Length: 149
Image (tube, rainbow, N blue to C red; front, top):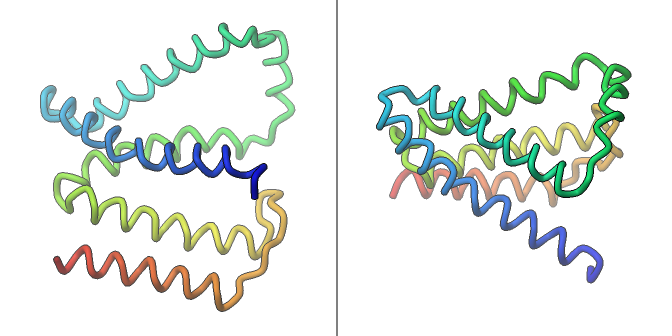
């Protein structure tokens, strides 16, 4: 457990910043009267930030040539990320931030269980069991409670 403390904390922080990202993107979308532009701007600025990080860590850009060996399907990740960010920007003002992210987490956990269970896309197999299903049910109950109140 000790060796996982830092990754666990980073995962919590990563999850905690998503609602802030959504709210800031919503504000930008309202300002320019186009939520999809806010998603675009978010990705452009994110790409610039990551590029600066790569320079700071002295990334060997000559290794980019290795990307040609990647399966074509991996490039869909960018499209999926864009869909996610745009959807949150559009949905959060309609559903509220708590309900939007409750539904997002419920969707993430449900699909994650399926990916784990079948070992899809090269993941290690982690069988679905009643405890994991109970966790999903509890998440869904949380979403229902958030929706109702």
